Structures are given as structure tokens and as C-alpha cells.
Length: 205
Image (tube, rainbow, N blue to C red; front, side, top):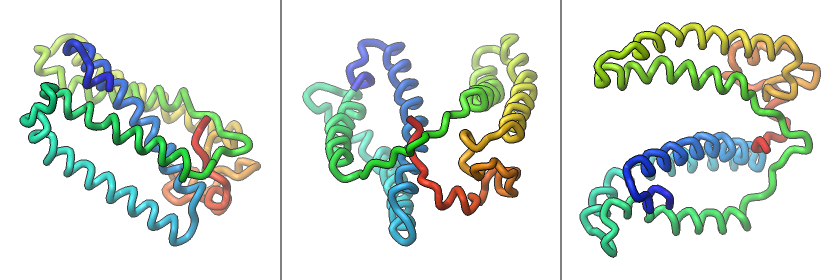
């Protein structure tokens, strides 16, 4: 709604940034809730529907965006592509309230704030100069940030290794209660350990 009601370009950019950040936070919660509240064939169907919905939504956005702007509904112009989401979100919130079971763990795990921040900074340091550096005329920051990206990536690696060695059972979903350094944990959790598959996963809260 903030995007659709933005009075100027900078407000729109800020609202879009907040929208993207909220989406990044919401995505793992949706997957964790699906994992915690389903099992077996139901989980497969839920994840299949999740992926299909994302694909259909991406295509629908491309197909309907232009007609929505051209229709100029109630004089909203380009704002309609944002405002059309408001009733959809309200309906989803109401349906989720009555149909999605609770999945909060008795002892929710803490988020890995240091690792998340370092990973995000490393990506920004790498991608921002590649996408904006040339258009900005090659300023000093467009050379300094790529040089800092490997250092930030190394810091991320060090932080994650230290967390794994120092007792990561409260932070890593692939650890047992004794934080045994399982093979899947060492290789980045491509396959969850049996303890993780059977544990009640929940949204971080």
C-alpha cells in the first residue's frame, strides 16, 4: 500500500526496499511452516503448490502489469500494480488465520545475525559495483567494494565455522542436541540430518 500511495520517487524506492526486505524475511517462514505442519505426501504436495504458485505469480505479474497500468482504474495509473495487492494480502491474512496451524517451537532458535549481516554485506560489495559502478562513472567506491568483498566473505566463513565449533545446536537446524558435527552440517546442510528431519521446525520468533 505504501508503494501505491507514494507521493514521490524516493518514497517509492524506500517502500520498495522495505517490501523486498519483508519478502526476504517472510520466505523462510513460509517454508519452515510447511515443513513443521506437514509430512510425507502432504509435504510434497505443499511444496509443489508453493513452487507452482510462485511460477504462476511471476508470469501473471508480467502479463497483467501492462493492462493494469493502461486501464488507469479510478485514475490510479501505475499505482494500480501495487494497490491491487492490498485486497489479496488481506484475504490471505484472514485465510491464514483460520487455516494455518500454529508451529511455534517451545525453544525457538536464535537467528544468525552476524552471519546474515556479513553475507549481505559481501553480496552488496560484489554486486553493487557491477550493476551501478559503470553508470556512476567509476567512482572510488566502485573499486574499493570489490576489493572488500573477499574479506567480507572470509569473515562470514570464520564466523560460521566458529559458531559450528562453539556449540551451534541453538543456531543451526542441522545439529543434534549435543551439536555433533554431522556430515551434512559440515557440507552446508544440503541434506538434513535425521534429527533435523524429525525436529519441529518453526518460524523464528
